[in-house]
Amino acid sequence: MALQPEAGTKDRLLQAAREEFADNGLRDAKVRDICARAGANVAAVNYYFGSKEKLYMAVLEDYLERGHQQYPADLGIGPDATPQQRLKAYIRSVLYRMMGDGDPLGEKLGRLLTVEIMEPSEPFIELAQRYIMPVHLELNGIVRLMMPHATDRMVRLCSAAVIGNCLLFDNAKQLIRRMQPDIALETLGVELVAEFVYEFAMAGISRMTAESVA
Image 1: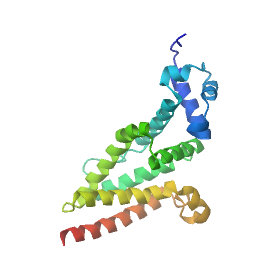
Image 2: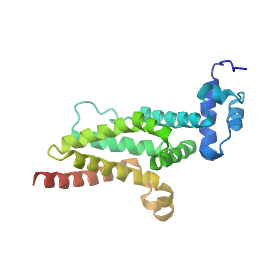
Image 3: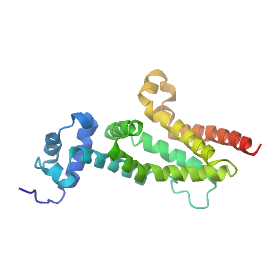
Image 4: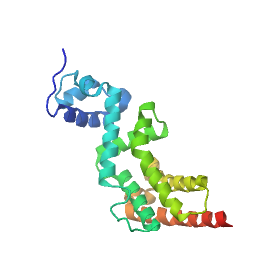
């Protein structure tokens, strides 16, 4: 028998799924446990989302959406900002999204997102096209303004280097905490790390710009 819509059930399922997937990952999470957490019929996941895998993608989409709303790429600096100011704001927004607000659940979901970024599944490609690629193209645009004579490939490489320096503090956070805790993101704080990544990026962009016009 078809499950009748119930106000709030879909939202409760999404919240319950965030917790279940954060604790157990996609493979070990159980639909019955998600439904039990949500106080919903065991058929509710298929009714509202289609499958456990689609619910998992909905959780990652929700995570991405929350991050972009809380920390937009420009951090509200305004349309008259210089490319340098926009680059610094961009780096800060990325690092703030990575660090989050200290919520353990958010950190666990961030690790799930990292797995998808490193080994993307086919369903995640669509999410990446909608949430990650547009923001990365915005970074390309910022770098292009700073490197007007560089090739498109050089601009993309410099953009990738900026993101790579940011991702290091997230993707390797567990190892950094154990082996070099003094430079962990939460130890240094977002503002100090952002300043370092920005200055490092500016030095690299300056060097590559000089080479492109030589």
